[in-house]
Image (cartoon, rainbow, N blue to C red; front, top):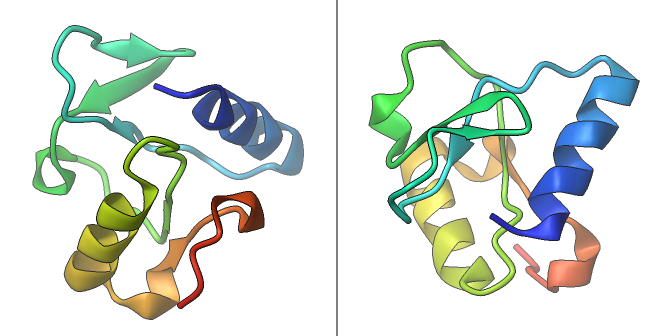
Length: 85
């Protein structure tokens, strides 16, 4: 997980947004800052409204995959990742 994921989770807490889970295909971690880590979106047991991409290494790939699965309206990324829609 990236520092950006940590910042996103901490910012969400401050703004009243609920984080359901962190999706990360890298094995080894079951929790990240108290949030469950799952390898795929379909592993989530709770419904969710949106996806925020925080993967710095594979930003474009993760962003495109999330859009393919969940649609443009539900996928977001910080501007610093440079992921134009």
